[in-house]
Image (tube, rainbow, N blue to C red):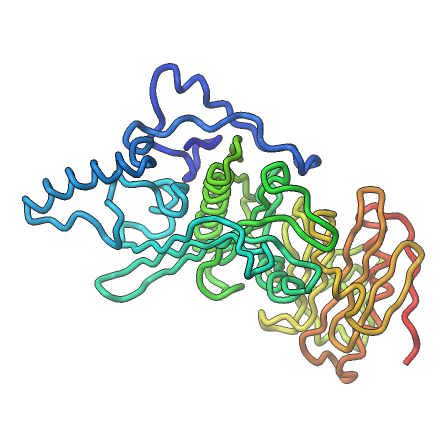
Length: 407
């Protein structure tokens, strides 16, 4: 498989001659979720093509195993031939991506066949897990999941955004509906491959997790791990597209150079939103912020006092594809409230509002995760209307007026 660019996602086993003329890779248009990336990926090497055929794979495996065992060498680990076997996780992860993630350590792969699971209401397609070892000690573990985001039952409205819509994440680049950090990454599978989501459903996504979500590390390690996870999720999504019988390929990610860092709060432009003023009684408790990178399908700002555990999180989901994931909270998350162009609901710790904008639905979500100031959990009621009004102007939704019911 080949991807555009010279980064770690490039496949070193591309075919020669006329096959190289076929490698023209362009991402699917970001503003058209029904369009698959047009060019087909370059054909894999002859060995990899043969090994995708089960009969040929068994023949090659038996021949190589006999040669290696005759030399006193173990031929495979967990049923997979080293070096020349199909790539891990639906024959998707390139050698360079595996090296960036695990170095030269021994790895074991557990891979499920991709298919909708009726017991999971058709939302679950399968997963792949890779574990690396130093001697017999586990060093790293990567989990790749393929699933449809659920809004009807609300199963993906809480934990999935907590991990995969976080302030430490950045956009994968133009044409790639997804985000990445040093511990999490996700990318949507094109709708023309999986079908347009029904009402209250989100897209089918491939998400990648490694270690604890949001773990803060030194910036240089963060860049390396973020790049490795970004390439892994693009590689894996291309493998899913092919495994589901669709054509096309996503190009490699284009990440910003800088990582997301904590900054001092600007009280007159809280979370970088012009016109959103943080009340004086909360400024000491929310003295620090960090905001996710620009150009992503969601903008996330986290705020705290002087440590990285966020007390407040504000999430603006600007891609309509993701809006239905929050349907349960919009309709049944607590006390209802309305605005000039939308509606929502709120409780003590969470408020979610859905507005109709020119580009489709936009979600405004404010979460209070800890006590702030001397008023415990009153910040949400105080800040939510001002946040919606100021943020709607920033994202181009126009003027929005919101009033929360009085207690």
